[in-house]
Length: 111
Image 1 (cartoon, rainbow, N blue to C red):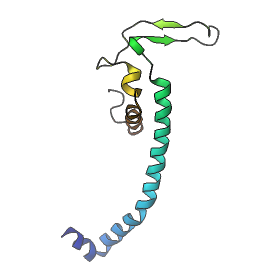
Image 2: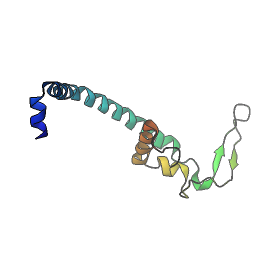
Image 3: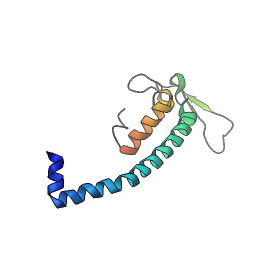
């Protein structure tokens, strides 16, 4: 019934036809965005996987004391008692999900 309404009302028909013509361009943009997110998720997994490992954070002061490091031995766990690096960037899927949360602004600061 609804689709018959789109065919009868010319202004609605124009809108539906325009949306159909715009879909391939939007799909291409989505695929490019997905490719960029995948690349940065792989990078984030490699760089941030071990942050906060065993509840410790290694701090390297710069630039004058670059050879020494300091281990901050505080409770460095997430609200769900997980390690920050492993919980948010431990696997490719988790990194991709974290990137999606940051990109959309959906509860990324409270997770």
